[in-house]
Amino acid sequence: MTPADPLALPRVPPSAPSRHRRRDVAAYVLFVVAITAMGIGAFRPQASATLDAENRPLAPWPAWSLNRGFVTAFERAFADRFGGRELLLRLHNRVLVRVFGVSPAPNVLIGNDGWLFFKGEDGRAFDRYYRGTQPVADAELQRIVDELRRRERFLAAHGIGYVVTVAPDKATIYPEHLPHWATRAAQHSPLDRLTAMIRADGALHFVDLRPALIAAKSRSRVYYATDSHWNSIGARIAYGELMRSVGDVVAPRLPAAADVTMPPYVPGVDVYHGDLARMTGDVDRFPEPDYAPLWKILAAADARCGKRTDAGKDLGYEWYECNRPGLPRAVVYRDSMAIPLIPLLSENFSHVVYVSSQRLDPAFILRERPDVVIEEMVERAMLAPLATPMPDADR
Image (tube, rainbow, N blue to C red; front, side, top):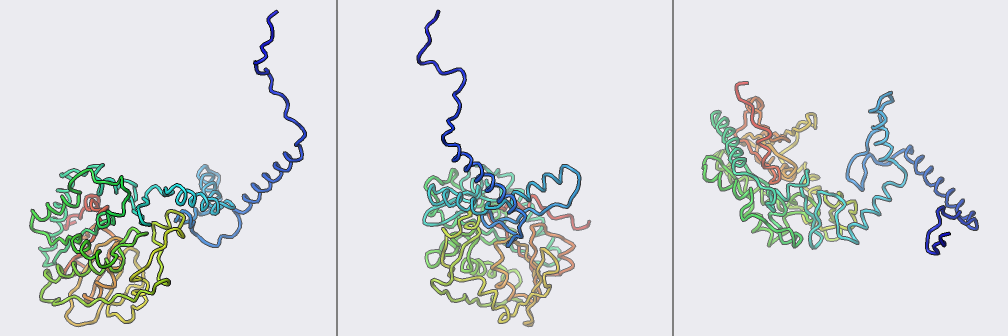
């Protein structure tokens, strides 16, 4: 008979001890009560239609139907409203940000000195346009030049001026606040190369905003530290550069750009939390001074000549008019970087429409009859003209 191995494990695990039965029952009851309460909490009225910790709207409750899509939509809406979800996410985000220095949002990069940087809607624009680890071919950049030249030729054929600018990403102007590992892999960025191609072509009125913004940042902060956009001071710098080129195009109808007055900054009162801070889910961790609050500029609309006339009727379009005699007309194709430019530019045109698109529509242009078309696009979206080419004018 083989002797038993004293070190061998029993073939059947021993029964759990029963001396902690009350504790186990209490833990079970508390777990069931907590899960039930959190589930019921999903059906309580919501104070907000957005999820602050994720900076996005709640998924809507679906209409009742007997199909698989209803189950998926119900699950998504239920998950967004599960009781305690926001609190748990907020705690999770705070631990990541404050303990590990990691952003919970995959397209937000935490830099130095409380600065945040946007990696792009797809999370790859930072690597593509700043670091250069995802190359942009010269052929793509040449196609952008070709598309912009198509637009310029169409407009020139109708006696309309054309001014193009690219709003630099924050990393281009403030690289010193990036993490130490965020270095450039290429000597020249796609914007460097595109600018060189446009200048070599020589036909476009292109405004390179980088030199003026870099020069101005030694005097004032020109981008928000916690937002993906420039602040009102940076927008004023861009406005001055743009209007110099617009003046060249429409002269002598615009002898001088309208003056710009920045609102006063109140320390300790004018505090800003940008879109990137909200995306981290830990907005309190990233306050910053708002040196020229945009809300103060917008609140002084009655004191400006340029007045909005469309009352928000057409999504993606904003019309402004200024009744000073002799001013030219304009159409501005823009993205969110131009929001603080709107109250500044509108002082210089008798009629101006802002279009939230990069697709220049010939029929719309001929209907609006502008003296100048201004096209602004942010650096991380500078390939947009390839995705939104101008339709043929004779269609």
